[in-house]
Length: 268
Length: 268
Image 1 (cartoon, rainbow over the protein chains, first blue to last red):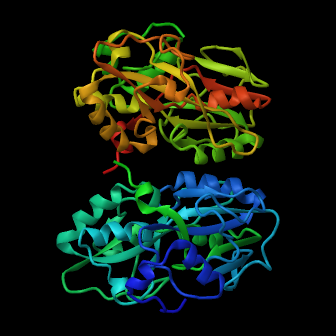
Image 2: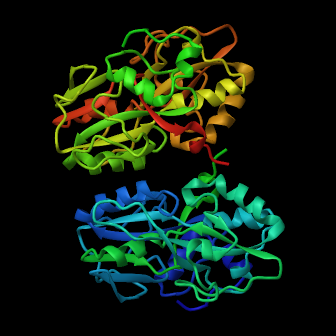
Image 3: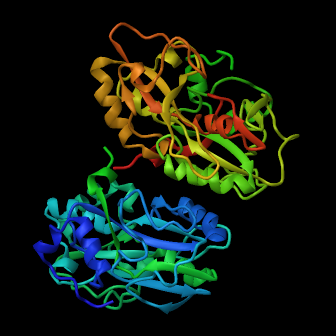
């Protein structure tokens, strides 16, 4: 996971199909700031006999795991982006065996299996357009970095063989805009909804904001408050804790860019 | 399904545990208007080997099938109402074999199976308090009737072996209040969210509002517009269409009254 994303308007205006084509061709880097206004998604693919556990884990933990689509076993396509191939169209993947990260390739065609069921899970990048539109600065994009993500001390509600801690993403938000950020994101429950916490990281069992578990450190400006949202990397933490024999996920911050307008996931 | 519910404030103020105790003792009738402010839920219990299909069907059809809780196989308790027993605490049930309704008892203890997984699905009764609070009249409660429900001509997105049509509930709403009803219910996606349609029933393939497929006919007042919400009876229509070997559901309108405040399911 490099710090290859930059705060660029050109990337923001790339159509999602072109973004996917670029990643398919090998372009690597976090997707924050790409294809503005289109929903991005976390990927987790597990053998079919683990699919019920994942889907139930998601139902029981809807804040970190809002499921946007589920493939048929062996399928590599999704209604969220007709024509896309889930094995190639993300910038970077992670391959897991027995709960251990064994590879981080930019293409998983070679290791994909016929019994894999893929889950696309809502991503907080989806609400960043709404935040920016309301004047909430996005420090990680300003700084050309991947968003900071942390494993918390809170356990998710387990489901079958799956258990693990809640993972959160953090954005530094000027104190006067925290309520705005809360109100806007509450209207997008399909992409994590309202923050789970704003303020003292210790409340979530996070010791040092400068050392995220995933992504990059992001610098706060004076007067910023750290605001934490449930994160779609939570299923990866569950993979580590629960050790299914095999799984494929996106690399944190390296999302699947769908065709779906962000506004489709806003209620009210 | 009788027309035993009446527009009573006493029922509205019954604590949910007492309502469940009354139903457990054999009291029968629709639950609209009971335990005001507490979430009501649809029940569908299927053998464990059908559980993934049901959960995936729900994920793919979140408007009619917002899942609020899922039990462990054989379990009869739920986090939504500690102390409750799902086999006895609903006023009336339906028992299904091979997609056919074979019994409609007030207690299913005798036919419950160790391999059943129970799904509790959000119910539009949950948002009726919000509607009433905004001055939207609830004709079915005024008339002491079960809400009207209709099988539509729209098919749900299938999942595994499960397929079937969308079922909707209908409430006559004064034309000037339709936008209010839409806005309020859009904020409650966990209990069906915004209406799927307002106006001409033919748009949904409904021929005659006076002949609902489930529940009772409800009389509109002059100036009322029929407003249709996705309905948690949709999984029952899928049972009829897809014919799993065995299933237990609530009887339409005869819901599970949970302890959860309605407001927990409102976003924003």
